[in-house]
Length: 254
Image (tube, rainbow, N blue to C red):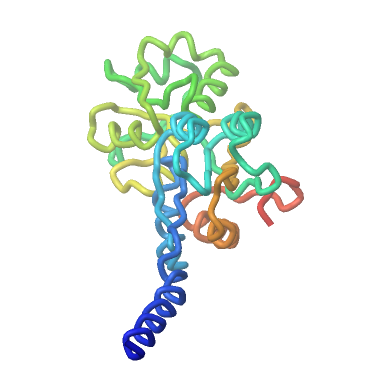
């Protein structure tokens, strides 16, 4: 009996010290355009994290409805603002982790051109569709809509659009030659060798593209370290085609 009691104590002790080894993984909900860079950040830092990718709008709604997420990174500030109003994130943890640029992409072996008006783009489509993220909810689509509206091109182009639920689907349509052109991010072009940038919109004609990151209100204890490692990986995002953020911008992750 004495041996049995000692064995039980040893097993109980082992169970206690083993608990940290089974710490819960951190779940990151991230905009689909981040996939290439964020996968690399997770791998290079050996983070115990699982990334779930999708459209920022869809992910934000899931978080607001109680989805099991610890860290969120979106491609538009509006959706993080919305989650903050819902008290679904920790506001003081919020910062902008990287930036991007809007580009018009075409097949890698296709011609470059300068779009002077909507007709130039319509002619280049040659009867095909222009792939874009959903104009009302997908960040890349929202930036595209703002740019086209500022240029006076949205209404002429609207009948020629193929709207998608996230920007990587627009990129996929182009890469598979199902559409001749797509408005995507510069980082998307960097990640897909079957496409190239054919036209670069003037950045002053659409809002600055920023990727806000925050911890959710229910984030687990390991989330702080994961977020810190992501903050420290700006070089990975830059090497993946994203844009830097001026350090004098107070929202920049420091």
